[in-house]
Image 1 (cartoon, rainbow, N blue to C red):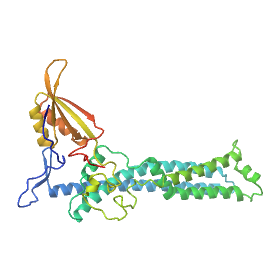
Image 2: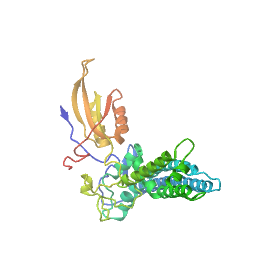
Image 3: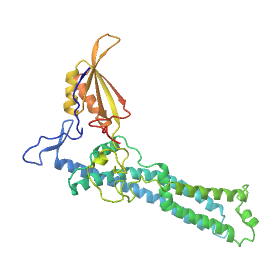
Length: 362
């Protein structure tokens, strides 16, 4: 078995040789033949930030729209129910409609958080880094953002979204509807004199009044439980919470503790690292392929010897650990150097060592 010394580096940023002078024309971002200067990179990030803010604003507006539907339908239902010939069942029907609006708004809230979390990541790790020495972002912010873009997923669960929208808006709407339903039952058209009068008025068609009251009580209890049990979920970036797991409220950049996965890791990130993979390249041009990977991707390569059982020939098997954003780059390099190679990419449960998660991480 022969090995090549492991080389590491950020695949999104190739270091430029140091020079005595710094120029704006000096490339600071080199990847797959693209070379951007510092001003070009900053301009691209600013435009991207504006796009994400616009997306978040659009979904924030849609949240308000759903709430307006619930408020308008509630007003209409109360107007109809308290009319001289009104029926209390309209209020119960409106409770059902408001519940549908709640689920729709919770789904929209998850989309809003998807865009909002990206905005938050840019604010804390790109723009804030421009203002606070040593003027560099946290070590994993680019990887987190890349994972957001390549593999979008909701940053919060549906239960957290339901709980937040329930406590923020819909709890008050439900309270008004329940009070209105009880008032309609107890006071209109005349005040009730006994419990039997209340159950008699609660009757809806063939459904007994006791059953209607039981269903309403069960709905109230279920709603209260959802609101209480989801109060401890704090993954939403819209919350005014410390950036890290401390109460000092002072962000710091490129922390060793954050790099080692301590409690100071930003709470709003989906994951600390991009998905890690293991690539095996079966080739007869191992030296050329490995040199290309080492030079272009800054990733270590290990060479093993294997025998094809069908042909009986000996081939080199190159093993390389990489992240999900580097797969297309690897395939391009292998295709350019050895089109006849055979490439296998498999998920890795965990990759520990230089360039990935530190071995001494607690």
